[in-house]
Image (cartoon, rainbow, N blue to C red):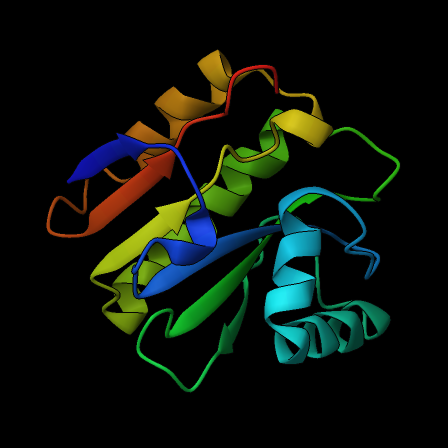
Amino acid sequence: MLRSTQGDLLKSGAEAVINTVNCVGHMGRGLAAQFKRAYPDNFAAYAAACRRGEVQPGAMLIVETGGPSPRYIINFPTKRHWRSKSRIEDIDAGLTALVAEVRRRGIRSLAIPPLGCGLGGLDWADVRPRIVAAFASLPEVDVLVYEPSEGS
């Protein structure tokens, strides 16, 4: 089930939360910077994976937190470089990989930010329907879709 919301994704209470990242190991602004401060172990794993060339569009980097909420941080590449804009094809490839991981791990609840919007420059009107379509096959998963805040 998809539900729209706004607010602090880090306080969602979901089993898994999405962190939008680039592929070069930099979490300097936006939601990623909040994740870097709140989950330094996730940042260390992400930076190491970037150095190894493992963080690529269409591939999720999943870090277990050791706690129940969130249990997983899913690092979702929405930009190839922090200086670049997001590409809709990377969002599409990422959503395919994300749904496969949610299914494989039996994740029951998930918090998703506006993928590639904001600093990424994509239009939410183009991205939101893709999220809805991607999760149509998983109605049993509680998907909290965080809408962009006004002015972003």
